[in-house]
Image 1 (cartoon, helix red, strand yellow):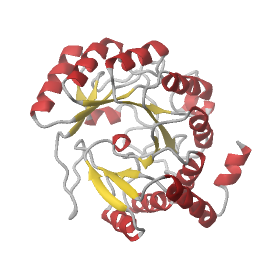
Image 2 (spheres, rainbow, N blue to C red):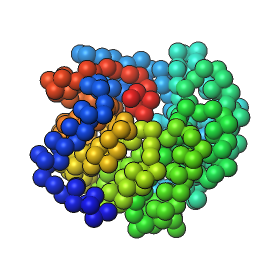
Image 3 (cartoon, rainbow, N blue to C red):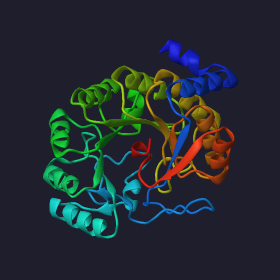
Length: 321
């Protein structure tokens, strides 16, 4: 961890140059721009299609855990599907509208896990209908992981938290980073494609356990690695928190690139809006990401100026790279 902290503290120009070189040595000159239809995206270059990729919540708008950064508000933008029957009904309706894939998520229980077990058979049915299915699981156990593998899902999205105080004070759980490391190791052992997510600034806008989380991912391995950034939400205890700086995000992305040179790396959809968003995207591209979600047009131009071949993809960034 001392070595990783030293790497993070390198001068930005040095760190950025090393990360960009690692990208060039291990990846083609492509940049995937993820614009799934759950959010409208329209610029002079591209307009996405509603319903092409959708998000479903197996708990509706309910969450038992009620973490301080969200308080269930992230569920409000998802389609509720609280029973296996409603999950299948939603899936059929979406397919009729041209949907090609779904993210299945929901609020977490007090154990930190999304209650997916009752829906495993329905999830398998969605897969048999030709949908691509990714699942945000929370802190799942082995039985749930085995059930998801049997269902044939395409990918698990798994948040990795690297600080026990953050787990206690933000997520309100009596767990440790080792619990997240074990769950990630189980997913890897079962050979389930997994996209670990690391939330920059989850501890009230401070960088606290993110480098430890990166080390957990480095040790376990990943199919895709995603960096997202705390976006202060109204009506939550973090509504007025100042998010981490774009430079800190750029440094985190660069360290992620250097610790995982072969792994596709993306800047996910969760991040603050405004000028900070544009600067975060700029630094992420310079630090060697393979994809990013909902890019600002200025970011697209920068990528092309750097010689990257850009392509818009209407699915989650974890399926775009």
